[in-house]
Image (cartoon, rainbow, N blue to C red):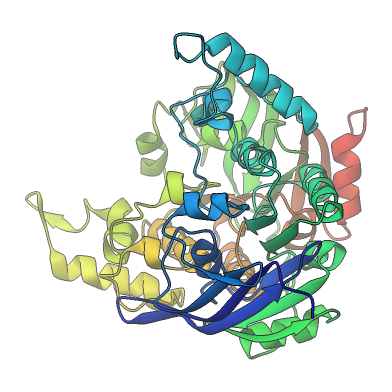
Length: 499
């Protein structure tokens, strides 16, 4: 029999009495791409952390090349040729891209000092070797986009010529062009005999790249397949069928008032952007990454200052100097990276859920704990957050449940305008369905929703209109019904501007 490149045998892991893994097993061969799929909270990320040396299992065994191993840290895994790109990025934000890429491998002078010039030169060559020409090695990591950070993390891992590569949700922050780049790297590594284990919630990606698929549910594996359709996979993942992924699009009320209007809004990576968002409308924003979407949302939320143009909220012109001012005007933002921009991971579900309404929960500056508990429990109950209790650290929840807590926090403010930025990133199919239903329900109840997604299918199915941005301008405006993902992608790459 062929010796497996990596095996997990009956792995068990619990956190505070909550079982994350229960006798979870799978086997991956050299030269194989093996996908691990399942709902958020099924145990996939925990298993990858264990196999990458970041977490110690409570029971079971890890085998590499047929030999049982004890991994007391990532360095031990690296020594055995196993590298991981974690879902929670491990880059140091206050350092440059170059410094992160060459961390602990910096070129040094004859005196043993790090050569900054050589570090930049070597990092530039490393990025070029993997076809990454759009990221400046001199840039601070905190100043580049989430997708660019993910790309840097991937380059750093594959540059070590791994024998085993674990990829935990590597495409969650990437758009189609960057996914194709990553899959090119995966195919190259597979041809070299590397074993690649990855997780994803995008079924089309799984089918296109995986040789075998292991499905997890409730912390255990429920089967490994070389061929399985999406409906059956969803049933195995969830224990139920999700009949229709997207809810029907309810027509926007006729003559609905304008809740948010931008006129000739300009700023960093924005040029003369104009739009009107109506009550009860889901207005999509799409296009290729890096063309101004993030800057648009930050500017509307007061996190970036416009250099020109006007912003009107419910008929009143506003100049937001900070997010606090936007919140006071009934605007809420769910950002792209819930772990670094939205949640305080070490604090409890209760603390995170109530964070935006603390003023309402205090009397004479003293917090009313009973009111805080009631508000947090309302978030958990209304959004069906799976948690052992509101006192549990929010970082211990799965990605989908973390996202629900973040959404619930802003809904507690009773905001009327929601800015949702890639809210289903890294979320499993069943939780996506819940979020889609929530977005449709909020629109029906009169909320105005500005909705960005890196998934063109989401925009096509959920939105009344879609603004396609290109080079900081609105290149096209598409109207439902009849919007397709192909329409959105085509508009994003066209050279001419459409009305």
